[in-house]
Length: 107
Image (cartoon, rainbow, N blue to C red; front, top):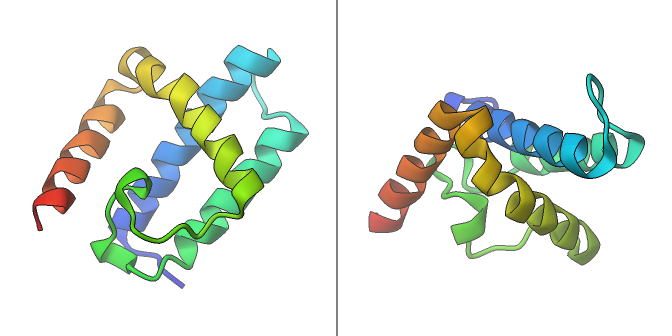
């Protein structure tokens, strides 16, 4: 099980993206709806068991698809919706995620 700082950062980013998408698409405020809560739990479990551990790329650049096809479709929709909105809600997290993606592609 991966518990390092890189995985923790990825988990935080995914959680923030799911919160933005749930708030925007499902109209929730404080808590996630049941389907978004389930997606978050699934995503965090997958990140905990990522085979690359602390050396992982961003999930979009990963050569291995560890999500089930239906969950992959859901998370892509969340990322497509929340990605641009991260600039307004969590700009530092977005910058961190983008820089990590650029750095990991150069390796």
